[in-house]
Image (cartoon, rainbow, N blue to C red; front, side, top):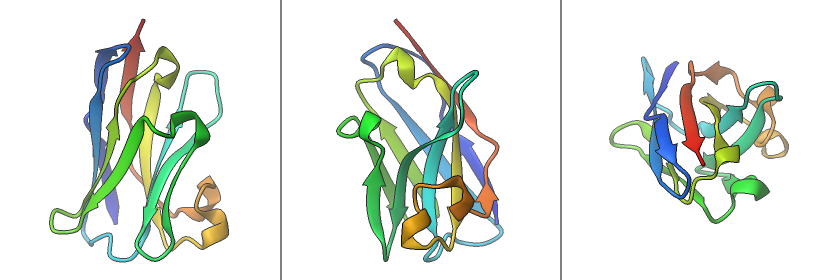
Length: 123
């Protein structure tokens, strides 16, 4: 499965962006699909995950501002980001895998990764 993430860009603080993650070659099926992000000079961190069987979870730092959703007909997972802050600036990557519950928020739980899309939030 090859993943592609897109939709990033430059936005002012308080603005919104919607990121998309599509899979080519195969469908997401029952895989967990997650978003991670990596800011310059920082480690990659978990943002959100959606899994048909294991639920939807968010990182505390974006809770209430970001929404992850899944369109199975389009084989696409979205990350709607509202009320963006400068500290949300990062490269956002999507990932997929047959991830067990305990690994949903961990990079190690995912076997397929997209190339990332850059989000810059200006103050």
